[in-house]
Image (cartoon, rainbow, N blue to C red; front, side):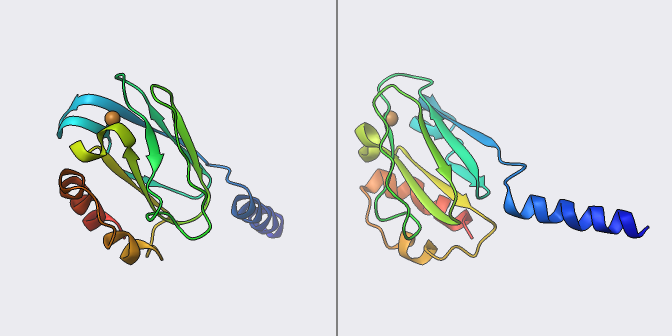
Length: 146
Ligand SMILES: [Cu+2]
């Protein structure tokens, strides 16, 4: 019994320090999706610290990047190249705004929540000004976020 307890504590310590269950989350960049034209699917992504979110160019002409004012403090911006996968490893909890640069004005935005919340930068993210169609899609995503 005592040995099991020690083994359990050792395992818990291992899982706390290494992202043993880190996963890849795939987001498609599409010309047409359930929410209309020029979309990320899914547009609201929940991830845990250590996960990697991959934006894949399912259709052409898309280019994913972080929205500068919608990142946790200290997180460096990530700017993808057109027609290429953009990958971001999310180590810090918080809110990460994503836009497809060529289609931001058409509403092509996504939101990643890392961790279970409450997110320290959610309030700040909600004050970010976006073009009208982007704001129209971003507002309900921010409403889901914690
Ligand atoms: Cu796009």
